[in-house]
Image (cartoon, rainbow, N blue to C red):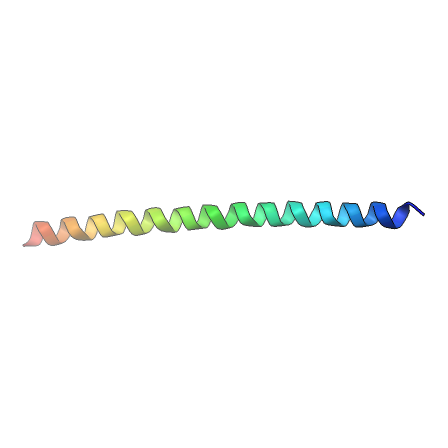
Length: 52
């Protein structure tokens, strides 16, 4: 009688863990892309200033 409820809770817990780790990976990738964009745009502006 208690087994389906326990299975449902563990399934929900597993889904929460996977979604939390997925969100963490997504945020990490977004931050990395943001830093790459920022640094490359600063480098490009510096090169354009240096060449002009």
